[in-house]
Length: 212
Image (cartoon, rainbow, N blue to C red; front, side):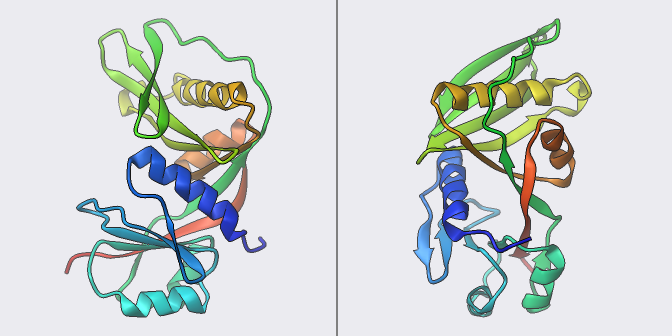
């Protein structure tokens, strides 16, 4: 796959930051940096590739809980970094189709609720027991809809709730007249999104320095 434009990554990363309630990304040489400020992730540096800029950044970092992310295969990130960096499970930067779909109603015993949190619009699927069954969020920013934190509780899987959440988030983007949709998927999530018409535009890899 071709190298992804850093501007596209910045659109996704800005949405991610707004969704999580952390500061917006700032330029960092040929990449971007976000001061996440969470106990398990203090800061993240993001690059379009694993070239010299990322490698120079990695050489300067010695503290734990700092993440490096790049639109490359995990093997490419591994080759670019000193051995002290751990490579996490692969991810996928994906783009969604800009098209309206008929939204399916929740199955019996579930209801769909919408709210706002940080800079995101949040969709939750609540079971009649009041248990949170599934959820997701979307940030609308700069003409782009950034989907984030799409999750289904283990005990409520295989009931179409992930698709329901995605369709509800897509409807929010559609209402706003936004065509571009982006997300970063896990291996498990990728299959669901591809069934819904999303496509992988780049691998997405993460390296971290953990506490000794």
